[in-house]
Image 1 (tube, rainbow, N blue to C red):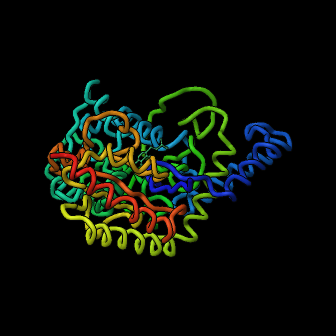
Image 2 (tube, rainbow, N blue to C red; image 1 turned 90 degrees about the vertical axis):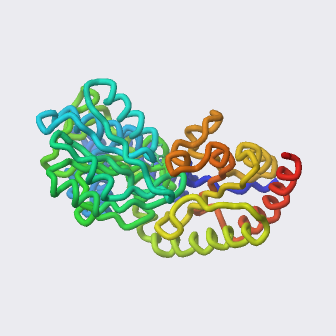
Amino acid sequence: MNRYYFDHSATTRVDPAVADIMRQVMCENYGNPSSVHGFGRDAREFLDRSRETIAEILNADPAEVYFTSGGTEADNLALSGVMEANQERGRHLITSTTEHHAVLYTAEYLGKNGYEVSYIRPDKYGLIQVDDVARAIRPDTAMISIMHANNEVGTINPIAEIGRLARDNGIIFHTDAVQTFGKLPLNVSELNVDLLSLSGHKIYGPKGIGALYVSTGIAVTPRSYGGHHERELRPGTENLSGIAGLAKAASLCHESLEKENDRLKIMRDSLWRELQTRLPDLTLNGHPEQRLSGLLNVTFHGVEGEAILLALDMKGIAVSTGSACSSGQTTPSHVLLSMGLAPEDAQSSIRFSLGHENSDESIEYLLDVLPPMVEKFRAMSF
Ligand SMILES: *Cc1c(COP(=O)(O)O)cnc(C)c1O
């Protein structure tokens, strides 16, 4: 049976060119970048060049890029590290209810350990309003963390405006850009961000690698201690194959960004159009325009999303309900609930996230399989 992948927001297949460079680093340039001999110098060269590549894409200085074990660690380091290092500014943090759990659970942890957290709720499209953030600012607000694009519905937040608001109030601003790095042009000075998290495996790079951009002059307390690696903010011998893979994946995505966005948008919009002509009672979740090109989140009213997911899986089609991290647990998506969906509608929603593995053929197959499946479930469920 052919298998069709519509879950690119959960993770992606490593690009063969990325795997090639990783193999080269692991098997040939295997030195420790901290060693002074030739092996070490070769490894250092890979490390430096990779950092320059990431910095260039972000319009940052290479010294502002810190490699981590992924988006989750970058988010943890940003929130905990900044709040701890900047207590003289205050102990209040502003974030949103639609964040990835890497941010949300770190905020909850901080909230139980001497800090105060305000959670901004989005509008019905999942969009965080700048005015709502402004109203939450207090004299003791040290940091604002609002994600760039949401991983479940794809809504893209007005990061540059929120960043300007933070800057005008002397507040440190972090954004989780895991879903936009490599998919949208990112310029840290235009976005007015002080810290930005990114990850490798959402953009055809390896799992277990990511980075945190930290603007020069922003104090961050490390979460772990050891050697001098990553200027002591993130010690430990560098995951060099991962780092080289991340840099390769990032530059490949960056090169083809516009073309790929156009391609995905056409497929995504035709999928949505065709679903609507074949099935009644569907709702699009997420912003109609301000949304990631590959993302389509749909409520199939009256049908369990989990039932659709499992039945599609039997047909070789991979989709997701809510975020991958919460699959297997039956609580409805915190993102959809905070957008105002009723719990039963949140439970009836499916995320299709398109990417390299999709072509018109995969969309046609999905459209052959899904509508009759939903009709059958609906006929059974009264
Ligand atoms: C996937 C994801 C993360 C976590 O990144 P990992 O590299 O898997 O740890 C964080 N934030 C968002 C928005 C994500 O989509």
